[in-house]
Image (tube, rainbow, N blue to C red; front, side, top):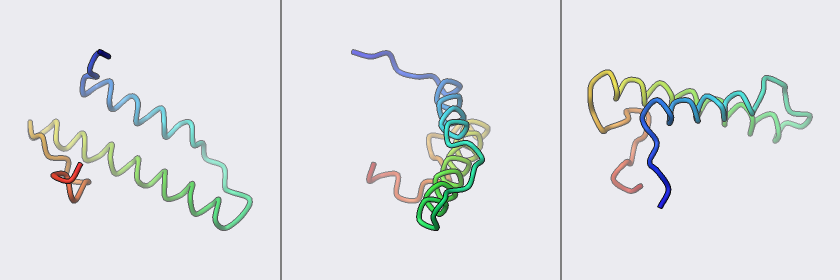
Length: 69
């Protein structure tokens, strides 16, 4: 079984995903929209993850329906 990631490792993976998306715009409206939405989602997840760590909580405030995950 794979080893579980620490909170710091999770944050680093989210950050790596954000870096992988880059800063370039998409050539089409749908591509640009997808990139912008993905970047925003990752940043919100990062901020929620940090907020949960600061509060020592298992609840990430950036995820609405966590009991469904």
